[in-house]
Image 1 (cartoon, helix red, strand yellow):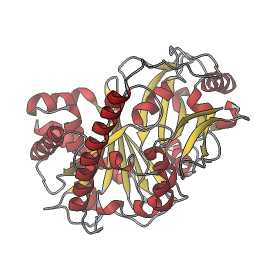
Image 2 (cartoon, helix red, strand yellow):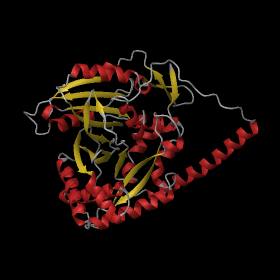
Image 3 (spheres, one colour):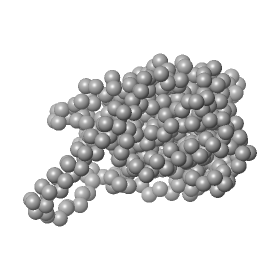
Image 4 (cartoon, one colour):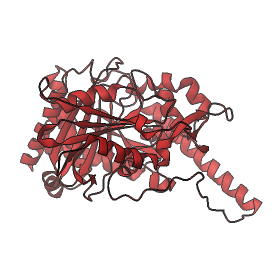
Amino acid sequence: MAGSPLSALDVAFLCLESETSPMHMGAVLTFTPRRPVDAGALTAILADRAARLPKLRQRARAELFPPGAASWTEDAGFLATDHIHHVVLSSLYDPDPLAAFASRWIAEPLDTTRPLWDLTVVTGLPDGKFALLLKLHHALTDGAGAYAVAAGLLDGVKLPERSTAPSRAIPAPRSTLDTVKDALGTAWGQANETAGIASSLVRAARPPLSPVSAPTSAERRLGFVRLPLAELRRVRQAHGGTTNDVVLAVLSGALREWLVNRGRRADGRTLRALIPVSVRGRAGGGLGGNKLSGYLCDLPVGEDDPVERLRAVRRAMTRNKAAGPSRGAGALPLLADRVPPLLHRLGTRTAGLAAPMLFDLVVTTVPVPPARLSIDGARLAEIYPFVPLAPRHAVGIAVATYRDSVHVGLQVNGAAVPDVGSLRDAVLKSADRLVDAS
């Protein structure tokens, strides 16, 4: 059965998909069970819950009109078990088997002719732990929606019954004049806003000479970093701002050291980060689709003093928030959502190669509520999100705060950055320097 249409931005993410630039988000979740895990029983639980999540039963189908458009349709042959796998790891040949396996796993594109998700249960981890590795294509949802989908696989979440048709509220009748007035007002406002974003994009473009750019490659490396939330909050209390500002300052220091260790100049330089911003609350309702804008933030990697880095980040983010998520070159996702789908089909993949002209990396935050989460009674211990690598980018960073820790997921182009461990260590060192300075 046909479902809702994909937005222009959803179509854009499908069009960006390639063997060397897969457009899926990922997450690695580790759990601490109270008893030895039964992988078969766990797979059955996950399959049952996945089958009751409508978004996971649908695939994208091209439409004849409007040209280039697509809609979600129920996959007639859907079996949740086709998307769920089990892998047993061994630590005999790799000091960090989960990271090594997850790096190969994240590099594998999803089949865009099927429902756009994949789930792998990983057992054989130290101390009886197990992990869930989840992929969701960015065309399916954004980070906030991705958490909502993932939460539906966990304990304690009320799941919908299987249904054949969604209920829709019947809108109250309105006069033709009121409808025309609203339509004209919306079109005029969006036209002005779109022109402003496009103008900002042109002004923000610069030569693609980023020190963190890289040739396209299908190879990936993942790194996991866990930071104590209490220490970062003490820094925030000492210097003001938000916990997210503190995290951005830590990442700025890490990128500075990483550049220096790679023989690149850091002094006097900034790295421009695209920071996605959810406008889901403004757009209203629904867990599916992308409801995104963004900020461009110059990370002060040229500053050696960790406190001064934090102050620079605070100033930059204050300016971004004052302007709002609907202005400036960072609002690129809003612009993409107003481009006809046919134009995305014709030119988005080529336009994506110009990403280094606008920003150097993506740094995104995935919202996770503080409530304790579990699966089949096993408590969630860690949650590491991963953002897709834009074409010609060497690194992408995603952050999730859960309970008493900030979890940082690092994804790098494996051909350009064979050792993600150096970046992981730089994040830890940068955090320690900022905490000590505070």
